[in-house]
Amino acid sequence: MATSESAPRVAIFWDVQNVRPTEQDIQNVNVAAYKQGTIVLKKAYSDFQADGKRHVLEKFCCEGFETVCIPSDKNKPNRVDQRLIHDCEKLVAQLQIETIILISGDGDFVDLVKKLRDTKKRVVLICHSTEKTSRKLMNVVDQVLTLPTITQQFNELILAA
Image 1: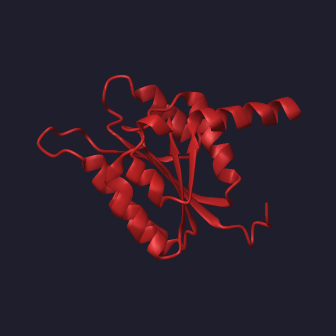
Image 2: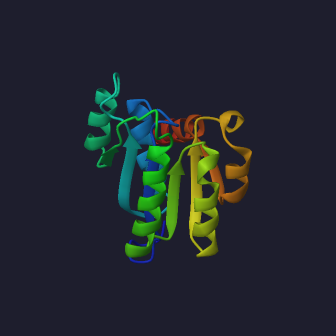
């Protein structure tokens, strides 16, 4: 890893509705993100008020994520995706982010990734599995990681220590 002054500035944007994490996944993603550079922004998007998501909300907060609660609305699908895309486009420019970690598997993010890549941003995709992830999305990012791979790397770090 380069010094913090020369390390790329990294932002994490997590589509929790698409990639539902365990508490350990959240911690492991933080470790994986640290390997990419200096983390300057961590945001997680979902309807955190929905049943069963409050414990995940607490873990995100404990791990330093800003949580963005988008209440579900059957008349307006993809609200979480739209908000994540809007925030990513705005914040990446404002904060001079060089590496974006997108945690999703949803093909709705293909155009966002293309725009980011057109502006020379590096995009890392983290998904549950490559089998359940949009092929188009995987084809436009710089790197694809899966949660099981990240967990394995995390466990190897612990064993080596």
